[in-house]
Image 1 (cartoon, rainbow, N blue to C red):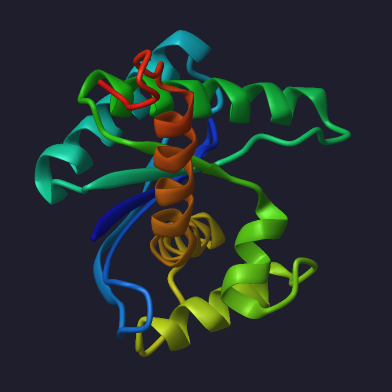
Image 2: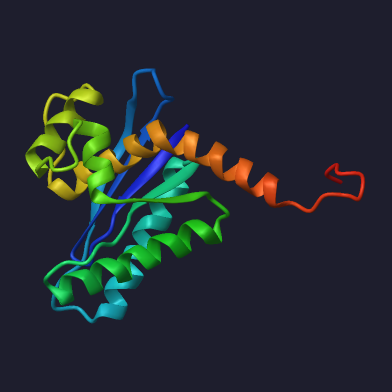
Length: 180
């Protein structure tokens, strides 16, 4: 499975592609950041983020996209920019028919480091170790995007099977009690 992880942000939107399956070594496919200038109008910044994500989807052809779930922060401006960038990521992936998963920051930290309270340095160190890199990806947004992709590979498959089972259980049955 090839997953594009997206750590949404208006100034820096981290992108990381990882390939692998649960229980097997993971491989780094690509990592980077889409940057937008703070003095540019928000609409133009969102267009730049959209173009960057589109380029990554074209280049790397992922099977799924994992986006960090926006959480409430004390700084309203920061959370608004993050939510806007997240919305762009969701739309771009959905437009292509790719499955999209949202993972919370604590879920990602727990998946890669074993602790939902891990700091950025610990996440970066574990991403480096799991992908057998010589150094941690910089900036932290890039490492976080890779951590999202890793989390989805490890947890996303199980979640997809659960979602499929729930959807199958909700399908209408025939009068004989069998599914059409």
